[in-house]
Length: 225
Image (cartoon, rainbow, N blue to C red):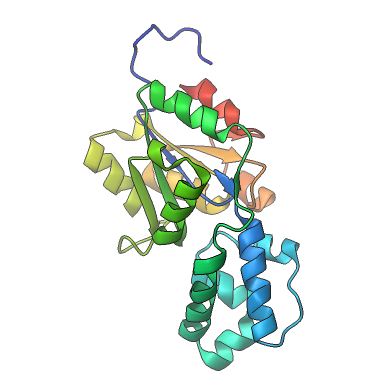
């Protein structure tokens, strides 16, 4: 924690934006289960957890094209997407858990006056449902999912929207995530970034973008306030 902050002072970052999967929660068990139910339905071999992790982050269409390339080519992405969403409505909270320190850190940040939000490339209805399931939804003023705006991250549009909505300048905004998409989004918006190494992102690719802060644990974020 910063010790030179006077009591009652405004937080250094008034708006803190988080990615969801691999940042706040470990959702791989639900995604892995869903993928293998689809694999069984399509008469394919089981898909490994490692392959699922590698494909997460760019959004559903890119994920499905990576995992089910022959099926998306044969049946079309919309059909495969419908199959995935239909199953995921039942599976999306399976095995879901927050990472160590998430609840306590969110509570602390909120108590210091920071406004918290989520920008994810997952469909918003699933993010909101999973936040409620994990007991963290009350900490966030905004939860933005893929397709909620005309452009998704790494485009800066969702970040710029929140900055304008709450009147917060770039220097007082922090974007926290586990992948290159998150760091790139922060850079595109002109705000500071935190790269969390415990998530799903490609470490080499993400570090090459030179995030402003790199942490191995979620609790470290509290030290920036």
